Length: 472
Ligand SMILES: Cc1cc2nc3c(=O)[nH]c(=O)nc-3n(C[C@H](O)[C@H](O)[C@H](O)COP(=O)(O)O)c2cc1C
Image (cartoon, rainbow, N blue to C red; front, side, top):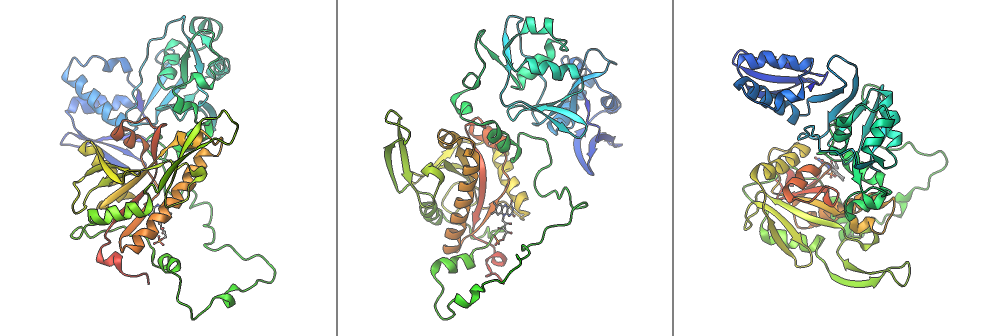
């Protein structure tokens, strides 16, 4: 293992060590002077095996320092035939908790590439990655890339290693650990139904990739408003330049005397509220009315599928907002920070029963969720109630191929606007939030990221007096 190229370590006189990268400094804690000197070896690299025994105090301290660097995604792992020889592969962690593991792999076992794995060019490197994987693999040796072609069909390990110049069983084990490879029974085709549970079978390749690359938690790329091309490309105009030709002016058709319809009044009133009045929090009575208005199940029914007589019956619901295929896959989870009449905590909204069901959550994870929302809104405090929309992905992908995830995101937009309008009508404040951490949600709920996970968020509360002023 070694430090990323872009990271340097700085030791202070008081023993504290900080990692400096991309203009940021991240404190790693206080260590003794010997550890600080040994830490500089990380620039060239240290053997992973040296961390397995923590016999001396210095070794334990170095292991702690390395773990803290790894948690921040600042370490990479080099796979080579021997020290000093050329790199075969470099592993870049994509999740903070990635640590290389070598699961047991017998020569008589059979493995095959995951259908979610793919190769692509990044700069001048060739990258092997997968939305299921906790790390990506930078391929430095063409023989590894060539051997991947062979792994597109199930391969018995012993024979594969004999017939291909692949650098060792350890690399196969690392790929297996990252779910880039998976084990299959001898003679199995290793096709879609063989990989993972039914929930995974329902995912199309591009949908799972899109989900993991457009959310936080399972990738180490910078994301959000980072203006990556601001120095190269001018911003596009706020309003599209008009098409040539004579325009029909619609302003002449707007009646001036009639009162505006309620819907238009609400649309005019609606705006994003990011700071809330914590002296006058939203009440549980208001929260109940809000959830009843936006998301409560109105009715349920069953119907036959439309592809033939022997298809199963499917259960449907009616709810206040429209949803693709009437699937209503979005579940609401509430992180309640400050609501009069309701204990602070994490809840699932049971939309059929119109009830809040507490879900036990550890304090650091609960706070991390609220802190991320505060950060996303550049607010001064966490929202009073943070509503996370978690999609039951299979509810949509069971029917729709290729467009499933895009339909889910469209449903998110519909629900966001419904929440904005109801909040405006009730005199409450709200704000959509564009990012969510899918790994954090999985940790809180214990539900795998591909089964049910966050696709949108909405902050709700009583706006501060500044925020409650009508728009200028
Ligand atoms: C899909 C979506 C994502 C958004 N994400 C964020 C966000 O992460 N942080 C934030 O402060 N505002 C967010 N907003 C709010 C927009 O910034 C806001 O709607 C826009 O500036 C227009 O202002 P208005 O809502 O007050 O009319 C989001 C809005 C939408 C619809």
